[in-house]
Image (cartoon, rainbow, N blue to C red; front, side, top):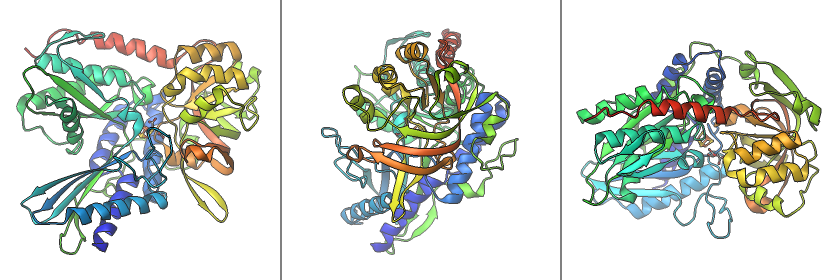
Length: 515
Ligand SMILES: O=C(O)C[C@H](O)C(=O)O
Ligand code: SF4
């Protein structure tokens, strides 16, 4: 069984660091369909560059390596208990080596187990089959896109689309709405798996199972194939675009499955997956435990570059080309912030401090361990490794900022923070605080964890390690850290604008299509 554990370890590393070929092709199609000189086009170039960097460095594509979920088919008589032990050991090793972020958090105490093991994590589904091979598939789906999953109970009323009944047309409306409500927060352009029917639990399971289909397969059920094509076409007319920046490409894949339901229930469950769509699988010889073959074509066989060649790994360069570029040295003054407008590209040199859910809650009624006057807060939960020289950043992209909405405005004012970096945008309360205090919200490219890790030159220190690695407050020295102003100190928010215009576009699909 020792070899089995090694095989699962290889599966985990491959899944976390190398996007499979079908996903790369979908991203490449998206890149070619997007206007290169827009914010969305440039974000796609950054994503492309990040995918290459992760592959070359064998490091996580995104810092959020998600909830490891295994679907395992075993021959009759195979020892599933031993296999489970092998999977757990492989998870532990991959975490220790920085291929997975410690992501298993006690829901009552908030304590991070540190090794990705704990009640309910990882998720392992075993099923027997009559083949003489072990088939293991793994998906690493991050928390930000998981938060954008949605389940509808038909009939219902939907914003922009009106009544959705218990028929194919009602299902159509739910799926379009699911894409709309995700906006850029799940790191669009995304992939969706849809489960029609089942109960609340199996509906979501069915939705997630769809994500194991190939991105470019053809649905064997004719009406579902038709619906998939319709959704791909119309969702890409919503104008949400990559990272919610507006643009032509909002959805990269749509896979729909159906199961029977109870007479009283009619669920449509949607699993939203970010562009960092990490899933792979291996067939394993049950006797030796060795990998026989990979179940999805591996990414290194497909060049990811789009029409525009992205060659330089120098962070910042790609998104700088088309926009006004402003270099900010920390600490930042109010005057500098007031000169910034939505659409500007900012390049930060100096210090930034990470802070996410646990820290924001804490700072509401405690002092900060460092002076935050003129400071930059980065919504980020990095992957970190420690050796004799100290801490090293292995992956460090932004996390979804909206979770901090209840705290952010107050914290900006209390500590004199000037810039908040994250992704997906924030709400009205934060916008008001930015205006009153003189602050700015900067959108980094979600999932581009290698790209941003390269901008971090030094780890200067850390506070609150008791919150666990992702939630601790890391003090980082950065250079060339580029992000886009999407909320400024003059009351402008790109996120509010895109949300409004995409709702108007959604409403254009109100009339029945499938009778
Ligand atoms: O937890 C994270 O690092 C990011 C998360 O996946 C998110 O999208 O917000
Ligand atoms: S940060 Fe974005 S790319 Fe990474 S897991 Fe979250 S949603 Fe996916």
